[in-house]
Amino acid sequence: MQNWLLRILFLPFTLLYGLGISLRNFFYSKNLLKGVEFNLPVISVGNLSVGGAGKTPHVEYLIRLLKDYLHVATLSRGYKRKTKGFRIAGASDTVSTIGDEPLQFFKKFPEITVAVAENRMFAIPQMMTEKPELQTILLDDAFQHRSVQPGLNILLTQHRLPFTRDWLMPSGRLREWKSAYRRADIIIVSKCPEIVSEKEKRELVEEINPLPHQVIYFSKYEYETPYKIFGDEKLEFHKDMNVLILCALANADYLSDYVDTKVERVRRLEFEDHHFFSKYDLSRMKQIFSEWEGENKIIITTEKDAARLELHKEFIQENNLPIYVLPTRVSFLNGDKEQFDEKVRNFLLGFKV
Image (cartoon, rainbow, N blue to C red; front, side, top):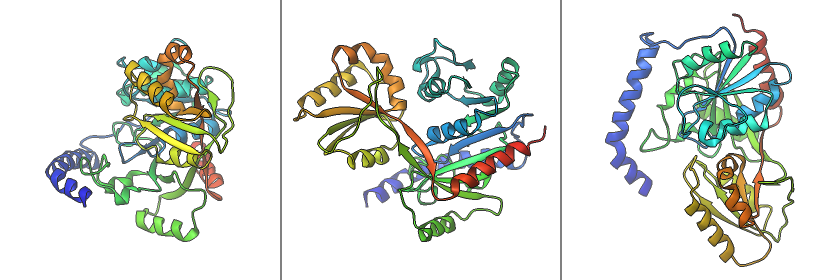
């Protein structure tokens, strides 16, 4: 009931925002504005909502799929970084200079090129000039950036809240009208549970109503062995553990549900997505953790959050805070992996300059 009241209150602002989006998309549909195409394959990964669909792990999936065969690059906005303009990640970069997700890409995959820029249309030619060996570029969170026309457009939508059941901002979380899904070539229903019945899959496909050229796949997260944020120490979950989850995500439910199956008790200390942790935040976390009864207790965070926590390395080490990072990987349900991989490879093999 409360949600409906809020949606009614926000309705005028939603309509105004939607009018602006509609005009912009109208200009693109009539070629009054036109996305630029490039002479190398560009793959976009994005979503219609403001976050939480799992773009970063899906970009990492594509990196792993392609990096042994092609010179791969990622291009992101570098959200909340304290620099401006085009920048290729280097050894001296931090979360402040390139943002948390690009830093994550750079540290996990040092063999690829990682770049950030507000304007992707101008950044791609710069990347091609500075790195002429590049063979494909992965655009992170670029579904709404229509100034670039990707060769392959991948749209993510969460299993728990597909875009078909959401509302336009500020009444809901959608950045565009639901009809924008028509621009996608591939739609991935992300963050699925371990088992999704064929009946549920059919119902979701019918609900999304894909166009003839669109293919729908289903993916889930797989969590790997946690490791100490500063050091090589690994961690095995035990049923007698108490875990404080420290995260700044758009949606932490999937993570929390997983940890809850592994340990005795779970508490969450949450912040807005991409939040830069302050000294006060860390002191608050320390106090909450210290006052929590029990001895067998740890702190779990995500790889994206760990990139921002590195700015507080001295505090964490001085206070001997047992913070562990939980790595995430994407896997596909049933036979979707082989079909998705083949779809991407066929796009690359069939790309013509």
